[in-house]
Image 1: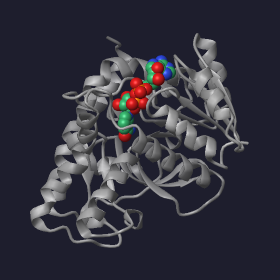
Image 2 (image 1 turned 180 degrees about the vertical axis):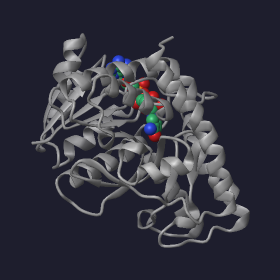
Image 3 (image 1 turned 180 degrees about the horizontal axis):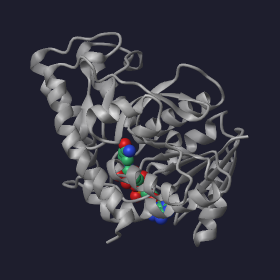
Image 4 (image 1 turned 120 degrees about the vertical axis):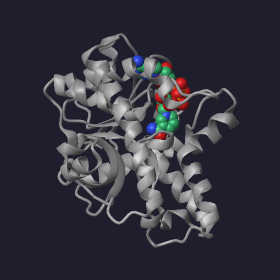
Length: 328
Ligand code: NAI
């Protein structure tokens, strides 16, 4: 029996993500938590004639505890999204506290759950989550994931457009680093099957993958950021993880993780100088079974992108850690 929780379930991402989970044969119980509207969202979804049993929960705290209790997977898109002109880091002041509070509840009532953090800035909210779990003595790095799948989904789509591939999902496009602007590093030299990006299109393509989210923020004109593509991406990652947990082999997806706690990750952390970093992760029954090092043999342009990303990430990570240890 698999119990899945969405925290922030009434929001722009939360609702379509909950719909996809409700449709999944991999989910038996779907628990929806938000500070508003979950009774309505749960009642609505509960009429769909699929397997999962749906419940909605609201605060006060017992609401979150009841929602999270004994969950197998907790997906967190709770918090505020960007408006035009904002960076993901601008969301820190509000979302850091929201994520911290939710992880405290998860640590208490579902310490073995896989936790998937979507709330931005992911570069900082994942370190915050790790520090909270460490503080409660229940941190298993193999079970904590920052969801960067939307960067991979965008990279697949944009590369396919350039190379003229009709089905973008036939491409595997690794994207490493973090999840904001210049910390996002697409590695087009490592695409399988191999592709050739024309020199005159390379810089614009990198920029589009790094700042693709801004296209959506601008087009929505004040009504938020990516929600539908993010719900798809979050579901894609959750589905792979749940399949791997049930024993499916060979499932790999990049994710922003605490590298030193994952087999193969220690060496990558030494190489990059950062502990939190996104690389392709082989998924298995315990979550992240192996961090795959694809940072060898990079092109000079990719090396330069990586260097810039690491500089940015260091500050983002420290900001998250400091938030837990010396709250403002
Ligand atoms: P939204 O504002 O539509 O929904 C957020 C929901 O969180 C709201 O329903 C709100 O009531 C709820 N919420 C607020 N505080 C809460 C709490 N303490 N507990 C439970 N729920 C709470 O925002 P949207 O568009 O769904 O985005 C959510 C987050 O996801 C934002 O931080 C956004 O930046 C991030 N995001 C991440 C992406 C990624 O690739 N990782 C991509 C797109 C967005």
